[in-house]
Amino acid sequence: MIIDEKNSCLVVIDVQDRLVPVMDNPRDVINNTASLVSVFGILDLPVISTLQNPDRLGEFIVDVRLALDEYSEKTGKDVVRVEKSSFSCLENNDFKVELEKSSKKQVVLCGVEAHICVLQTALDLVKVGYEVYVVADACSSREKYNEMIAYQRMSEEGVKIVTKEMVMFELVGDYNHTAFKEIQSKVR
Image 1 (cartoon, helix red, strand yellow):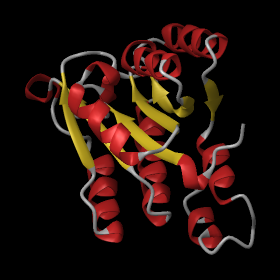
Image 2 (image 1 turned 180 degrees about the horizontal axis):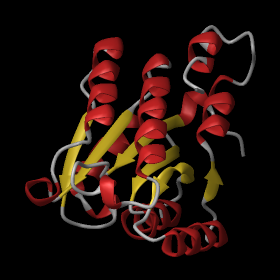
Image 3 (image 1 turned 180 degrees about the vertical axis):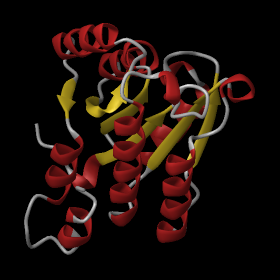
Image 4 (image 1 turned 45 degrees about the vertical axis):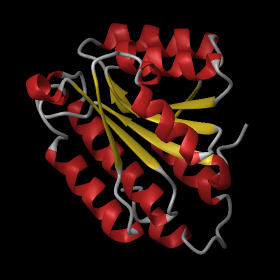
């Protein structure tokens, strides 16, 4: 399946100050997550963000926080922010309500940790009928091995493993899309 602009939302999972720096590839997670948030803002598509235990793990890391602020300015909408204690986002009632309000059936996931919160969220979303796309170059774990096993397991369970550029270009689908040039500038 191709990621469809009319049917997609982005979920940013736990890209936080005290969590991301200890990941295997923190700069990729930060940059690619910020780019995805920007693209979803350009296309005026829903973004839901989560924070795992923010008192302990902090707020969104600065580049992602700025991208979320830019999204709000561009779309005139606040980014949905869900604080959670469960590893799976779907175990949080506020998250479930916001996802249902979006009325989207394709969910693009990015964030950390790939083998914990991203994995459990992805598997739970598939179980209840969503098409799930995990952006591998916008996710990470502390150890690469855990991350790689998580992608393998997710793939075996029906989750599509994609890259930031795959998401960006599938969303626009055509060079003639009105947002193509602006989105193409986010590839770098």
